Each structure stands twice: as C-alpha cells, then as structure tokens.
Image 1 (cartoon, one colour):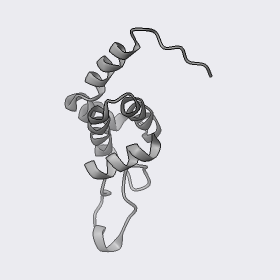
Image 2 (cartoon, rainbow, N blue to C red; image 1 turned 135 degrees about the vertical axis):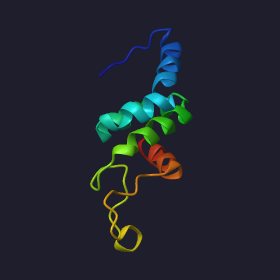
Image 3 (tube, one colour; image 1 turned 90 degrees about the horizontal axis):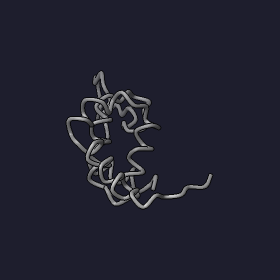
Length: 102
C-alpha cells in the first residue's frame, strides 16, 4: 500500500488528536471500539507525536475491557480474587503497550 501525505495532513492529524484525545470522547465512545480498532487509532496518534492523546484514548477504551481483551491483565487469583471485572491497563501499562505496537 502506498500512502501519499497531503500538505495539510499534519493539521488534520492534530485535529484528529483533539477529537480522540478528548476525555469525554474517549470515555464515552472508546469502549465501543474493538481492541484492534482502538489500537489503530492510538498507534496513528502515537506515531505522529500525539502521545498524550493516544494515552487518553486508550484510557477511555479500557473502561469496557473483558477478561480476554488486549488491554486487561490476565486473571490472577491473588490479585483478582472474586473480581467480576478485569483489571484494565493503567496509564503506565498503556504507555508500554503503545511503545510495543509502534
């Protein structure tokens, strides 16, 4: 696949980061995206210098994680005990995840 960037691409990416990096958008809609979809958006933001927007986006996304989702820790009997929902990634986990998928 060949990609040609228009001269206005940086401005468009900056606008995109204000949308997906907005806490209200991230927390209201992030969990509606699959992990793969959320990662694609976060990766574009991260690779274009919008790390904080990428982190905010994924913090909103993880609010809807299930046990077997990408951004949730595997069940640990000692840490999770009788928890009915998983431990989603925290900010440090997300920053590490972004570096790994970059």
